[in-house]
Length: 179
Ligand SMILES: Nc1ncnc2c1ncn2[C@@H]1O[C@H](COP(=O)(O)OP(=O)(O)OP(=O)(O)O)[C@@H](O)[C@H]1O
Ligand SMILES: [Mg+2]
Image 1 (cartoon, rainbow, N blue to C red):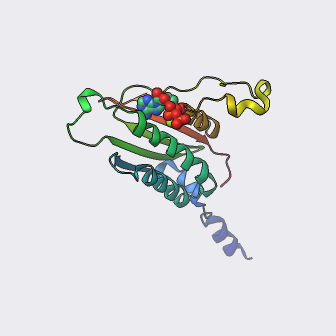
Image 2: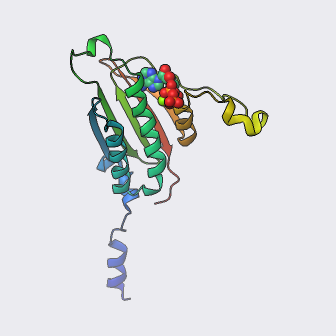
Image 3: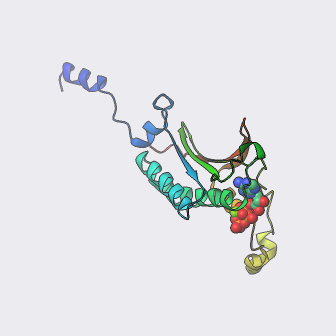
């Protein structure tokens, strides 16, 4: 390779992967879907949006976990959220916003609803796996497992109030740096 060729190679921008591009803050990788909970396909629509988005951004390996997480969070809105009085519109469906954001090193999934009541985030273990042994499954309650599963799959779970009422439950996946 002569000097001119090697200079050209050095000046050629390195091809960046979808995954790298999704984490570039200047390109603003953010996707949102607003749903109104009157349809039996609400959770399905949320799952489909999240998996499509992660595939597009090169995070295909995270799709299974993300689908389970969003199913639990949207399912919780469907089952538990009661809109604040100021947000209640007679006869109108409840609103759910599903948000996906990629940021350098992190992927966030948020599910927003119109209920300011915080979720009951599990603290610690229901039962020590060492003590419970083979009976752990039998000792767990039938309900209240959803957020526990979410906590196991992601690196952090928290919630934040929305300025006009309601809240967003957030999850953070720490990315391993592979591109
Ligand atoms: N979006 C939400 N709005 C209001 N309360 C919530 C919301 N999400 C969760 N909660 C509260 O937190 C509790 C724990 O949620 P979690 O998903 O762990 O269990 P669950 O929904 O009761 O049962 P499971 O998910 O096992 O069917 C719920 O019972 C509910 O009281
Ligand atoms: Mg639940």
